[in-house]
Length: 160
Image: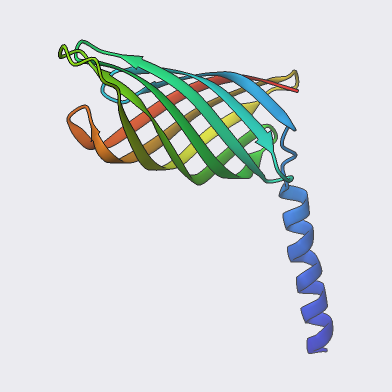
């Protein structure tokens, strides 16, 4: 009797995860606008790795009165379906870049960081994916005035 209950419970659990599995587009390409003490504009690419994981690569630029920078970010994401095309996602990341301070020094400086990412997205019936995410970033080198930045971003991507 206990064996049958265990088998039925295992079947129901597997069925639940199968029903809630979200098919991730093999590729998505678009734009992510982020805010981290100034506006970032990033070209964003996502590659589906499985039905519920993907990798995101973002190449961004930022310019302020005191510096200009180029930044590359890579994030591994787990995607969880909420309902229909509505998903939430979470994952760790790493990145780095080059910064040019506008202080008369002609040298470029490099920086590196680790990041986390949590967000919500909606995938339309046509190939558009929009998202809103929160990405805290901890910098290894001085970048601006802070070693910790809280980056909030909004994205629109074409899925193919």
